[in-house]
Length: 193
Image (cartoon, rainbow, N blue to C red):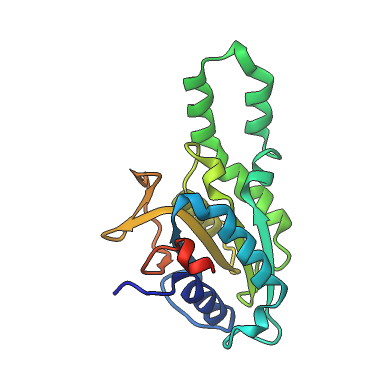
């Protein structure tokens, strides 16, 4: 059943997981976002993070941290390599190298930056996922976070849609599948007013 309040339901679900709710594997939650509203959703999440205790189920000792994926991207070795190679390499080669290594390198940086990776009550919002297209996908990041045993509650506003349980990133089906908790419905401009 599609929700009429996907942004609200996303923050509620994050609060429930931060408060100890259990589910499939790790407490990872994805909400589809109409791509043109991805940055506005990130802004709204920043506002929510400043006072998450307005959300009923958010634990008193819960914390929130926002990691901007576009900022972490430029900290990776693979990004440095692409910049160094510049015009001396074929674009397809750079894209292939990014697709092979970016998720692993990004998550290595995330793990260093996550303030409480062993605490489910610590919510980490991964914003600006669209900036990583076409180099890596949400499912690859979540899979790598799972491999590294990150227990924090992870929330990702996903610029795309979910069809039949599969993520469609800018109209392309995901290369991999990670069983994250998915909010039914898609955040659009009307949900951000």
